[in-house]
Image (tube, rainbow over all chains, first blue to last red):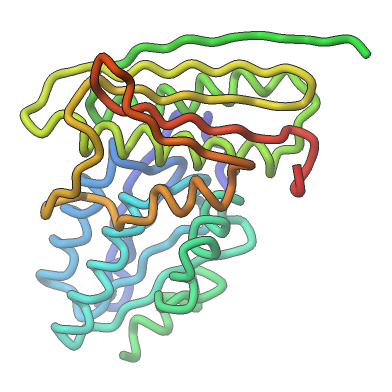
Length: 123
Length: 134
């Protein structure tokens, strides 16, 4: 896992076998949720599937969680593959928010980036 | 037993970029104390949700400020997030999920939401610093 200073964050998008993989690094909250949403929307315009990688995400809040839920709904409507990687390396706050909201059972999560890409490739 | 007390006061513009600033200030306050990392992470999440609520709901027309005070003593932390706006009325275009307050309630030992006599809304949260059950 990258050792990003706590205030650093990044949103990276790459295409892997027709699947767009959006990687959120560092901390994401209301201050980045609009950018995350925009990058995901762009990905869903052209990709046959979308994997969101939270394995290097150290923090998310409910504003970002809403973006993830909206992305899953949109992918389902389009018939596009969709999965979110929530790994052991994801920050405590990521796991905690999913558990506290009960949304860990509603979001299509996989335990690794590779698993998420595979799941998003086979909707 | 020795009583150690410290207080932090922060004022931010009621806008999204201020939310991580408050979170990092709270972490900074706790980093010098013997507080488990998971407890710090939980408190950071609760404070973030309180600030996000204030940013999203207090000033529908923009502008405004949010004041955060945090103080700890004897293994307890109190954080108050105060806006001076129109309260936490629901809005149809909210960027949240409506889970902010339930998340805060699940993490904090107690939470009080008040309407100060001079306007606005104050969310006052109490946390234990001793451990997961704290």
